[in-house]
Structure formats: C-alpha cells, structure tokens
Image 1 (cartoon, helix red, strand yellow):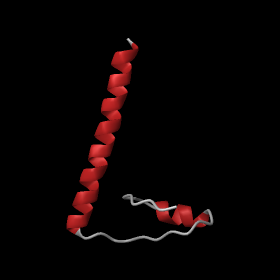
Image 2 (image 1 turned 180 degrees about the vertical axis):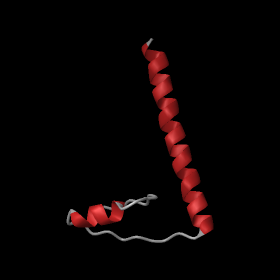
Image 3 (image 1 turned 120 degrees about the vertical axis):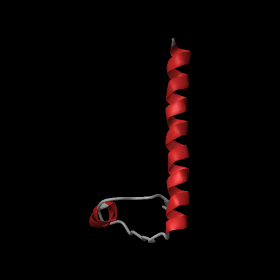
Length: 58
C-alpha cells in the first residue's frame, strides 16, 4: 500500500517494527512546503465537513 504523507517523530520506525516495509524520502524545502500546504487543505476540508454535518443535524 502506498501513502504519500508527511510523517513526524518516529512513525516510520514504528511501522517498520510492525513488520511492514517503509520507504522514506527526505523532502527539500519546496517539496515540504507543498506537502504541508496539501495537508492543511485536507484538514480544513475535514473541519468544514464536520461543521456542515453538525449544522445539518440541527
């Protein structure tokens, strides 16, 4: 399974310890900025969806 996600702390080590294969790429500054921007939009979308569900449930 392929996941193109930013990870932090010791996540790759934890995954590897569970017996799964991990491939890590260290990003340059521009790549890191782009991935962080995409993650921010993903989190914002989840927040907006939650708010809409709450408003629709009322």
